[in-house]
Length: 116
Image 1 (cartoon, helix red, strand yellow):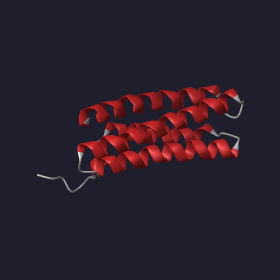
Image 2 (cartoon, one colour):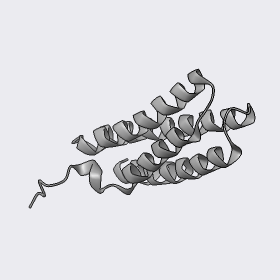
Image 3 (cartoon, helix red, strand yellow):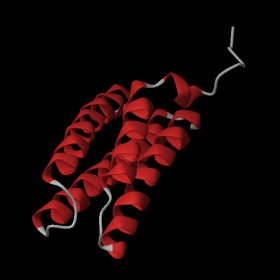
Image 4 (spheres, rainbow, N blue to C red):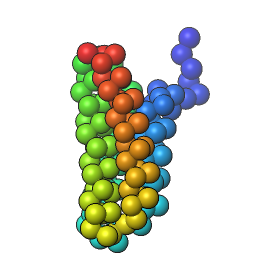
């Protein structure tokens, strides 16, 4: 029986971790507006693509969109790493976001393999 009280992405740990990545990007306080925007858009896109993939029907389509989400998580982490190296956010903030991105990457890799 289908549970109509939640949407498919809400039950995915990868989605919860991607939201944590987004929260960390927001909290990082990147001073460079273009880099901050890039990191924010990538983290938001990771969340949105996970939700989109969870709502897809075919395994191949799910895997393709999960792969896009995985790339976006990497991009968000790279933007924070670059910001830290440039002195535009703290190293601690970049490290915390990087840890969340690595966890999201691993979870999304598992979801992709499950559907491939």
